[in-house]
Length: 179
Length: 216
Image (tube, rainbow over all chains, first blue to last red; front, side, top):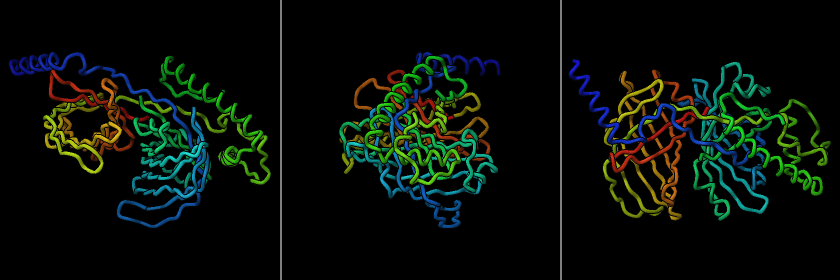
């Protein structure tokens, strides 16, 4: 048994040597997140499609809004929506798709897919249209952007994450670039 | 300033974030001047919504553009997302197969043959049988889309999908977003959005190093 352990140890030391300095840091450097822009989305009352095997499908139409960040600003083009599934376990699957138009007329297609969850009482108050403490809600997503504007191509060359906050008549989404 | 910083943000990071915010506030001030002149419909909508968020009721018609454009809405605190290390995986791979050029660009497939992973609350092996499908876009950016299984030391298997954007410039760091689907025993992995880093371990080992961070 001891022999086996020492062989294992020798092997793991050997593999450390082969892998070099890149392996197994105790505290790896996390990626940095830098603020890209925030979107204020005005939304309609949800259309409830009904109960499906994976939860309740509801569609929240996007009526408009605005967005702004360093070097970028504009409006939310009316006509997008968030196709949500409210799952039995209290999670909401978020699948929002909409278009942004910058002040200079460039269009950005946004697809933002993620999750939202909170303690049951917070969720029921949120669904009842009340203002709730946003720190109790986990509302995070992964956005993908598409644009043909050359000055906005950075939107298609990085990973971004999104944080969201839900208010009775709107949603605040902040996009962060991963560095 | 009303920005609230979450716990655990390093001083350096805070300074960097502060610089970003200062830039933002300057832009906001510039815009305020602009919107005073133009009565921008943009700020109008913003204020209307933020007042709603604060639980106030106000007839939309009564809002005057001059009152608009609070510097980033004091009603909504600016919460910074943070990340938390989950695990790192050494994923053994075989040389990639060239799949030729498809309608969207050059394609490749890299088989995943094994490996190990370890983090503060989790460790185990990478199961053979997964693969990474790659697409080189017209602009030279390489998109990786890896799908594979990890098995913990206590026998639980979960599925990882790792989608990476890889810059055509050599030496650039590579980041990804990672979807994890785990059974109940590791249900906490289902409750967050994850991002990752990707590094090659060549030439020492035909493998990549994937570090996974939870978006807090």
